[in-house]
Image (tube, rainbow, N blue to C red; front, side):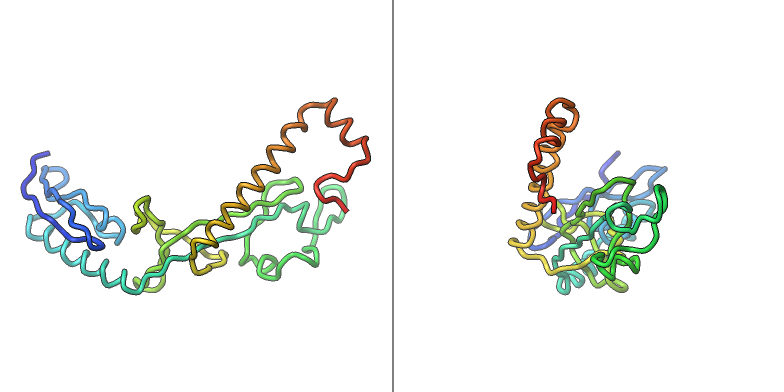
Length: 206
């Protein structure tokens, strides 16, 4: 993996070093995540100059896109069939219950999970970029733009704030805590039997 050339580029206000290399199989190439972020090949260039131009052009497009970027939270709800639909008989369901959100019913708010009475909440912080339309990229560990793209069809998109992310993390922790309590007794028949026979109200039952 002989290094043909070295360079420095400024990304999000920070200088970064780049190594440009060449092999017969890969051609001229470099390990530069911004090329991946922007969907530009990082290998297969016939000349060093063509690789350098691709880096410069992609970096300019990246910084132009960054000017109009916003951080968002994408979230959606998953409802099991048994919790969200009306039971027709022992094995069949038809129509959603009145309380199920309209967007969900129309297929824009989520999708059904495997059988059982349950639900889950899925969310992720993303970067929204204007690049041939709107695209959504993951947030990297350093807070920058990560590699890849997320499909957010059917997701609710919110402006990101620290408090909103904190609140969603708190919901995750609360649901995990509930699952931990239930699982702690569910596979202990004696304890579960006593609890069910006690007449005590369980998990907010009506």
